[in-house]
Length: 304
Image 1 (cartoon, rainbow, N blue to C red):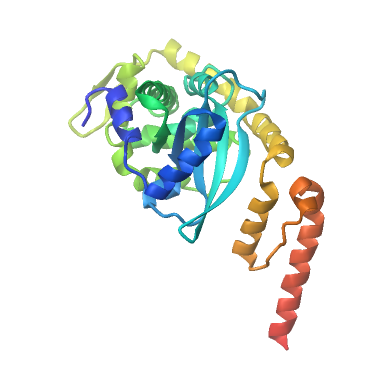
Image 2: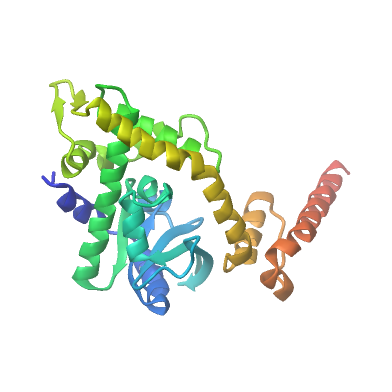
């Protein structure tokens, strides 16, 4: 095991990914003049190219949008296979600041304390900067985890407390026990991560032979961390709702993404016309009517 958080995160980000993922990341990076492209999500764990690949494209310079990231959908045919990707684009400096917990946003540090890989980088200096930002995400998450968790417990107890709280603060619905599935699916990633993140964040702890740790948090320190969290918890759903509303009008490729999702889940093919491509929100009622009619006709055919 790497003996510092920075070394561990750098090694984790350097994990191998499929050649197709590397090629897709490079294809996304070059037009954006990116510093690096992070790959994450279930496809990272499984190595599958099916479904939608998840990328974060990190750019140099200042953040263009006040409500970030910019989200887009991409399809690329490679070797006779259509690869699909949902891409978030944001400035690396904004990513770094959010990962450090200096902004209202909770999604960056809650997402990137989980596994990710640096699928493309613009040299070693960019890779080091991105790794340092991801390490900040782990520190931010670990500090809140021990503030929310019990006075003494296993690392899993603290991570569960963290993920329960962050999922509840966001504008989305997760199945009960989602935090357990994250920990079980990514056991190697989280094994030993909490102590390293606490040390890097300046929080001491005692550790027993049974794996139970007792963070050295004073009442004032815990109250300060919980106060920091309560503000973000209170604003989490409104902030995420604003992001969803923004994405509904600025999501590049939204019509193609929606058409693919609909066909995958219903079997109904939705033609992506130029008008639907330009006006995905206005087109939505007509698309829903098309799907309903197709499903109804299929049902009547089966009944006959």
